[in-house]
Amino acid sequence: MIALPLLGAALLLLGGRRTDGWGPLLATVLSWASFVVGVLVILQLRGLAPEDRALQLPLWEWVSAGDFSVTAGLLLDPLSLTFVMLITFVGSLIHVYSLGYMEHDPDKRRFFAYLNLFVAAMLVLVLADSYLLLFVGWEGVGLASYLLIGFWNRNPAFATAANKAFIVNRIGDAGLITAMALMLTTFGALDYATVHGSAGGASGTMLTLIGLALLLGAAGKSAQFPLQSWLGDAMAGPTPVSALIHAATMVTAGVYLVARSQAIYDLTPDARLVVALVGTVTLVYGAIVGCAKDDIKKALAASTMSQIGYMMLAVGLGPIGYTFAIFHLLTHGFFKAGMFLGAGSVMHAMNDRVDMRRFGALSGKVRTTWLTFAAGWVAIIGVPFLSGWWSKDLIIEAAFVGEGWRPWFFGLAALVTAGITAFYMSRLFFMTFHGKARWEDDAHPHESGLLMTVPMMVLALGSLGLGAALWPTGILSSWLEPVFGHVEHDEPVIPVLAIQVAVFVLMLAGVALAWLRYGRDEVPVVAPRGSLLTRAARADLYQDDVNEAFFRGPTDAVVQTLVETDRTLVEGSLTGGTAAGLTGAAGVLRRAQNGFVRSYALTMLLGIVAVLGAVWVMQ
Image (cartoon, rainbow, N blue to C red; front, side, top):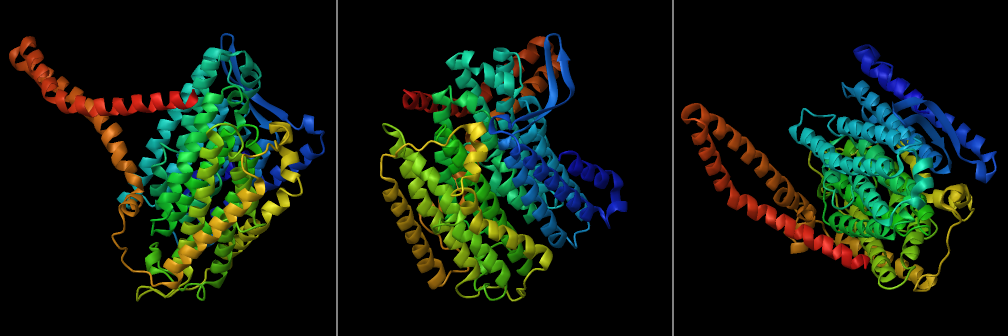
């Protein structure tokens, strides 16, 4: 499974221009071959008793230092193979789509090499049997995403977007590295079997620290608060990249990490509560931002952030939510990948424009794209009996389970956001495909070719029917039961029927409001100034300004002050002796002190408030 796409990446990168003609097709074939191997392994596991469905595949002794050793090996169990199916099937469809989308790009061979590299790295991440090997795949997908986001790096803005994604993810990676250091200190090992098996003997404080460090890594990779700032800018990459990385695979890696570490989180309710809080904040944050975006890809990116927030909320709920999170992850992978590919088809028809205010009335011009996109739209807003209805409603119902303030806080946030989701996704759909045409004079909308539309059709079918195929039949819950145990059915604080009716009513209200404003009424070509909240949402709730003021600014001040101090010390010593150098350096420090202290004092004050607030919530 791993070697085939890795071989493709090596051949295309090392073969150079000699592989231009046949390289993209080879990469696509190898991705499908990896999918076939995955299917065969699943069939093998299905033939075993449920308690035996975890195959260890040791490869070689990797790290050996005294009594410590790590064997590179793979873990083939229902959880890892569920991700394998999503990665290889949706990933292979995106390879096929890319054959049409990148047909005229002179560097398409390099693009397909990066796609194969990404698939291989993602498979290492989910198939690893230790946190250390998982980290290899973790960094591999980080590298591949950097290369793909910045694929058209001749555009400085695109190169900057790739850098931003890379740097923000490195902050998350520091959390994962810290978690591994704590595991080594506590358990003396990094393999899942030892760490999870010994978790019960560790102190609650240590488990909480490990859980929070793992969450920091998950937040970076899955664009969760407070490390969500990179996802919108990452839309600079070619659209197939957005479908593969930012819908179906890499952004779900954080959910996988938390779910895989359930043995730790089940023993630390405090860290698990923080996971749920982070997911809740992000699902609301992404929904608010999505309501104001006019760039079709950035609106979908905000939606992805919000939907992954639902998944993080679910895993933060504990045993009752693990299976629901993976279920929503699967359905979301289909309908969001389909809509991203649909957005690419619209861009293909509209001279690569992304401004929805310059679209409208495309349903009659790109009918296949319209129908397949509509399948994703009705799935994500939760039309009954479609995929999103099955998976998202389960999370909302589970969020209302519990005692005290938690079910009301998590449940109401998830419920209200479902209505907001229906609004902003309907806004996107109506602005793009309905209403009056608002095209530029040089636009001549036309449907994409079969290489692009056939993958969209397959994903549309999954958007409509995957939920019904997996949940009422019990296929998914029974498949994941050896990993997560039996799915809990605790009663929420509000009757289930009342929750379902409320979700349905909010969904209808969101669609109706979007139709009145963006389907029936005329849409201004230039966005009106809007309310304060609208302007804030357009600016991503000023996330970059916050990062600049509280993190990058003070850090730059530290570096610049140290550099200037060093320079003054050296120059003063050369001209007037050591005493003069020290005097000059002291002057630099005094001049920098006021602004630096004010900036860092504000940062520390906010940090103290956040910590005290978290402690109060935990108590």
